[in-house]
Length: 383
Image (cartoon, rainbow, N blue to C red; front, side, top):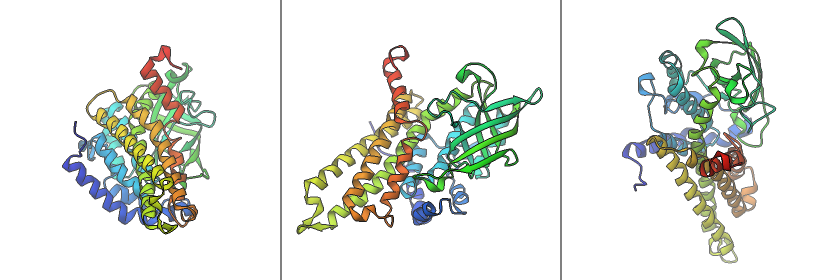
């Protein structure tokens, strides 16, 4: 059993860490206050190769494995959780296209994603449902023998304010629930898509938006996989992205915890360092333990993905647990820092706000616990 990274993975971590320290961390709080990414962020992420992580080499990507993708996102998250979402979406959508697209589709779409010419959104959630993702109401209305027009609304779409393209899940038939849902990959033409940015508790620069589709034209050549199979493709993608979100959450919480540990070492009260009080030291020790364990579960899920092994159980365990312990660790870090942590002049309050969003993204705790329960018990014996 070997828990070490390869030489290439260590080099990747160092490269992304250096980039993050120079081009991400210094702008973290300003982006949050302004409620938008700085103009250079997306081009810089693309130039660093971060949109190309999961794109195969033959399509202009880096062709990295799942663990390496986790390494890159872990380093990036330490500087700014929200800056991870364009990278996460690129990895998720590129993976679905690689697994389900035709050769022509892969050649047409993947190089644009790798270069950053396509900023992608994952358009699943709708106003009337979130966790009940199979209840898609966005309609693909026939517009000839090989064409549709998309009519309806998506909401809570991270990067919706920035995305040039979307993987859009729409109902193409009256078949019940998931069996009638098709995945389309299409340009989000503003002539047919009205965007409204939401005001959020955290990740305020991420452009989470409502998208109203007013007859967006799509063709059969825009269908990813087969008609009526889109929902299953999206869910298989979540089994990978949920482990990545878990790592992102752990990384942000670890940054907060490191600040709290430094404060406990150097802040004095009653003539001794704070860390000498059990009431300060023991909660930090507990948080460090939980974060370490959550990180291992997330990396196990990614390793199992790379090895071609079943990874749904580990990925969903990581997804419900890591954000929970990350939020608790960031909260404890804020309490350790006291009035310093409570101030928006320090980054801990923002980290806590951003982390709360990871408890919702790509599936709530109850949704992912349901997957775990069904894997453990079997569907006939589980909720």
